[in-house]
Length: 133
Image 1 (tube, rainbow, N blue to C red):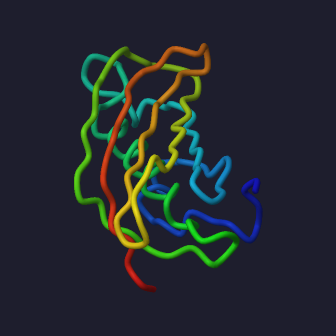
Image 2: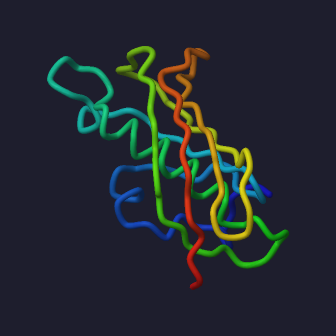
C-alpha cells in the first residue's frame, strides 16, 4: 500500500525532522528525508542521531500493520543495533524497514538507510513489542 491521505506518520518528531512516509504495508515501511543543514553534524555529514531515528522508525512502523489491513497498532523499541557504514551530506536518503520474524507481541525487524545514489549509509536490526492502542 502506498502512503496517502489515510496513512500518516502521526509522529511529531518525525514530522518536525521532515521525514516523509513513502510506503507502508504489512511487514514493510519506507521513509524518506531530503537532507538539509539542520540534519548535519559539525563535519557536515548526516547526524548519527537522525540516522538512528530513521532506522528505528522504519523498523518499528514495519511491524505495526502485521495483521493484514487492520488499523496500525503502537510498538516500543526493545533493542536496536546500528552499523554506520558511509557518510551522506546532500540529496535524499531512504530508510527501508522490514519485519524478519517474531510473533503476535514481539517482532524482529531490520532496515537499511540508502542514499539516492544507492550507497548504503547504515543498517539496523532490532526487537519491538506491539502495544494495544
